[in-house]
Image (cartoon, rainbow, N blue to C red; front, side):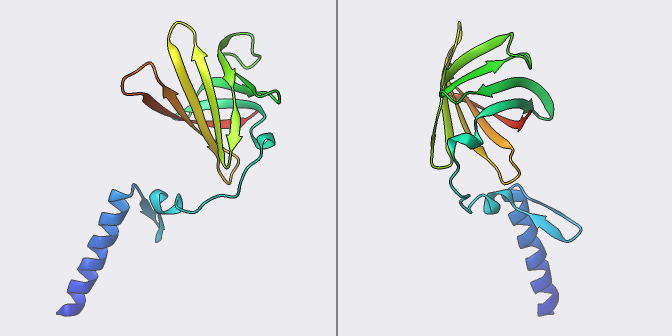
Length: 143
């Protein structure tokens, strides 16, 4: 009688962990994003951020981000930079890119980003014109 109870407790524990940590299991393999994010990636360099990026919001193209070698950035509505939305500066500390910007007519914000093992930029777009500051999550792919 104890063996079925142990199996039931194990199944419930796995279900609880994957649900709480935002994970999922498929074909016997489980992914727990909270647990996998505990490992620290190796330090990145400025060169890994410099370039042109397509910014996606839930799979749809949102904008274009240009990170220049002179530590300036441009967030544009078009892939050729002819319609810049805002600009700012940037720096890298450890594994994190920080790009403070001013969005004309709206307010100040920050782009706080890392690059994952697949070369995808994970972007936290912080809007300080909201109280409390609003955080939007986007991804970036080089183009």
